[in-house]
Amino acid sequence: METQDQIERRGFFTIGIYALVGVISAVLGAPAIAYLFFPPKVKHEAEWVPVGDLAQLPVDTPEEVVFQRNRVDGWKISSEKATAWVVKNAGNQVVAFAPQCTHLGCAYHWDETNHNFLCPCHTSTFGADGRVLNGPAPRPLDRYKVKLAGGKIQIGPLEPHA
Image 1 (spheres, rainbow, N blue to C red):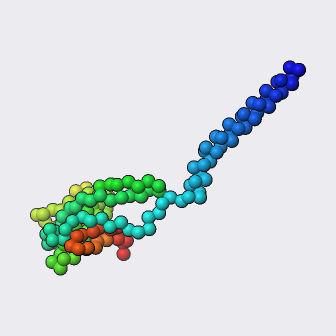
Image 2: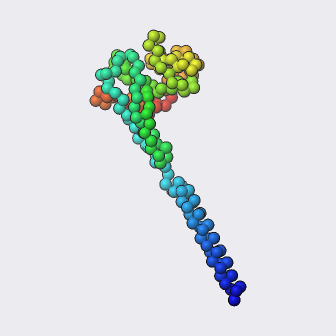
Image 3: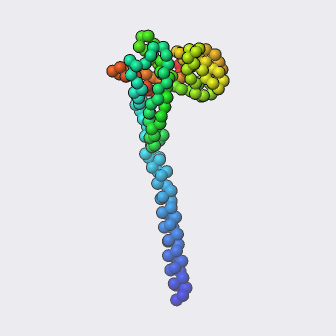
């Protein structure tokens, strides 16, 4: 009679162990299945962010503007502060440059005395139109897409390199 009770107890614990392994597998497998069948959010349309008024921007003098932009990483959407250098020419055409040097990504600034952008890390200089005046920067400054809507300047995604 004692052996019969032990067998039933052993069977009970075996079933319990298998049930516990099944629960753990389901808990660990659910995120993997969700990842496979429900892909991350993909943002198809470009985000256009208003950065200022065209009338208040001085002609041929770069202005650094600060704006909020949303960044999508898979399922996570985060708002981040970003900057750009905006230049308006005499024909009211606007260009917006990304704030990183194209050499190693250092933040450059506008040098008012020499009328050019200067990167303090390795002394690359860029003209107000973004072209390289003095290396080691390998290419002109990266540009944002820009559009004007009702006298307001809007910045979009970075333009692809030509």
